[in-house]
Image (cartoon, rainbow, N blue to C red; front, side, top):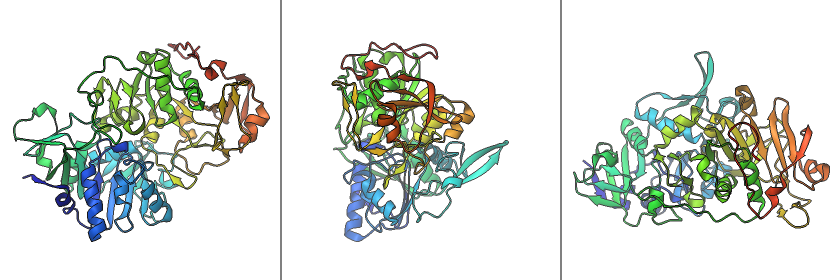
Length: 521
């Protein structure tokens, strides 16, 4: 029978040494924040629960102490297995100092692992992560020297190599929904995405653990439409009602983001002319009419704004790894949600589709690129960002575009006498050795997928012999403005051309998307 209690009483049910799974997404989306705050308060007052193993599939937090950073107190956790770490600077600091055992595994792998645990199976088998830092031959997802246990093995099955991620028991799952009845049945009509909510609850129950669910509203038993129940009460132990539960840290409520209402039109304010817009525009030139697309967080989401400005957003289908298909992805702290999607799936099903090649193209950020074309987004410069869905997406998409500024820490002026005015300083991002391999160029070459690397001043493509420079910004000197700011000399195309000068103008580009493999014009 389900127990209805306040956040403090729910937090008291979490024992020392437990493996705790917190489901949700970054920016406060689907975050069971009242329960997490109560756990933090209990630890600060009682030094309990201590020694936890914390599992979070997506990045969770606000960068200012929320989300997973509620656990970032010395002694509260001993091990963290996370798909993305970028929202939690406090937990990153504990990982960098070696005070916790820190692991990062692909978001899709962890999402699928919850289903395997729920079904009592030994783990998940996938090729996602081969050749990257998740591969045991390159670190096995370990982020520091304190992480010594092997969570991932290489196995051979049907004549091919696979990564086997081992199952482990979940003692406590903390999930969130919108409305629950007094029998514990939960709907998610007021949430911005479905995450792994059901799988998380089933995984804990299959492990002999407990499920704590936070909801906004409590209603009488038998009053919920069973077709809308996402988590049945038979797998819920404890309900916490939090009437002030927000859709995200940025948004209290929005019926267009929950799917309750369809926006009559989705307007976009054109991006101001900037380096970000230049890069997004050049990435858009790689798109085809009819593409099914994933846009990563940050610079990549500018592509949606560019297409909207050009009136082309209806010619492609956007998707987000949290489960939406179609519509317009939200950005910032609302990332993961979507306005006017045609379908909203559990994250695990979305990753099934991604891993199986459902994406035509993905536009993803980079932090570092090496001469072979390997990309690092996960650990660099003393930061642990993690990968989220990056590895699933980059290994599953048929075509790839990696985007980012050419150097770090140096502002670039767009417009003026020259289309682009570049500084003399800045930290190189095209480096001799990446600090961690998040994308394996060798794997992409094996599968014959085209890969393009876009910056504001140069464009490269992946070849069997390494990355090749194919375009530079108009008015720039190849040696002084490009090669001098790289740690290596790339291949240079004999047909080296100029980037389209429309990228650097304030006016719209009058872009058209091709229907075949010819370049957009």
